[in-house]
Image 1 (cartoon, one colour):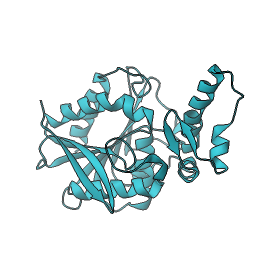
Image 2 (cartoon, helix red, strand yellow):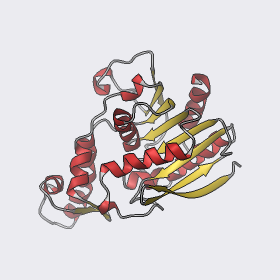
Image 3 (cartoon, rainbow, N blue to C red):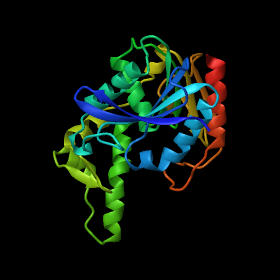
Image 4 (spheres, helix red, strand yellow):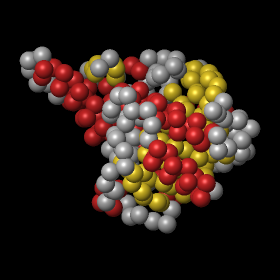
Length: 259
């Protein structure tokens, strides 16, 4: 089994936690950007097992807990989007991105955040990108997230409330234990997939189930982008799924072939 170490690092005045697999001196380095809220928790086992798999094959894999989430410091209610961009910046510097090319791996919202990060930091030393089931619209993601509260309240017989609208109007709304400021909700709602990775390096887009159409992607499939599909459950939405072998195998094969 690959070695595992946890590290707390500073991103400005904030403390963030990194779960690291493999040899820190490895020349092949991969940083993971997780999905949002409960999807982050549901996907942890699959992501950790994939990180272990890659680490035994010579990769140093770093899993990030954004500030205000997981084992990092701060509270989600305090978070603004620029904090998470600064987290990515700090992690890439910590893994030696200025000296050695680093690959980025994003799941769901993590893929959307990477896309946004590349729009403001296009000059980082990044070589490859793996996107697992990317979110294409921050507003759609937020609407799905706030719908969880609407469903919970419907079972209690409460009057239907558009909680996303309330948040956008300035209310701090709690959903399944997650308190989001209206500022963060507005910032996430403004995000949409732009395909910035295609201007930087080779990219793998992996979907569970049906492949996305070019209309869904919002840009034409080009030589810099490989789109593949895999069989398996939507593990980021389902508790107690611990392994996604098809996604793991395709990701590793592509990483090695695209070097």
